[in-house]
Amino acid sequence: MKMRFKAVCALLLGLNSLPAATYTAGTASFTTSFTAFDETLSNQYVYFNNSTVSLTVNPFNSSLGTLVKVEINWDFGGSFTGTTGSNGGSASLGFGGSFYVNSIGYGGSGNGNGSGAFANLPVSFTMTDPSSSNYSFVPANAGVTYDPALLTTFTGGNQYSVSFDTGNSGYGLWSGIASGTLSTYRNVTVIYTYDAVPDFSKWGVVQGLLACATLLRFRRRTGA
Image (tube, rainbow, N blue to C red):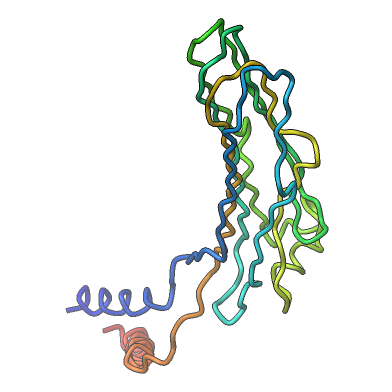
């Protein structure tokens, strides 16, 4: 009976100790595709329509519990698949830039790749982020590893933006390409991790905890 009683109390106490919870505050994907190739042209640049892409995010809702961390995960890259013209050709893809929360910069990354071939041959390649552009902001590290203004923004009362600024330079360069597709992607996800507030509206659990506490005190006093 003692073991069964202790097990029930441990179960009830466990209901008051919840694991960390997460939710996605926002996600977005920004893509481009270029297909207007001409094998008679050389040294042609391709530019983004929008050099800065942004996602608007709601701040953390403190009524959910205690904020453990904020994650901002950027993923970017691109690819080319095509065919060279009668004189051969080449294509390249490359871009990079800085990451921001509102106007506060916190990091950046970039990469490039390319390929070429003799006349009338297929060409293809891919380009990805060389480093993981995933950033975690833990409240205890505000002012230590990142600008404390970021934490104020995450937990404030106003929406904020997360953005990737790639600048105004061209992201693609090609010569002598007869046909093909040059594409890019810039994806972002914002995730909140928090310790949830226990739901004390479940009075059955509360009463069970009180009963366990009372009986445990009685057993200690009586040695039962």
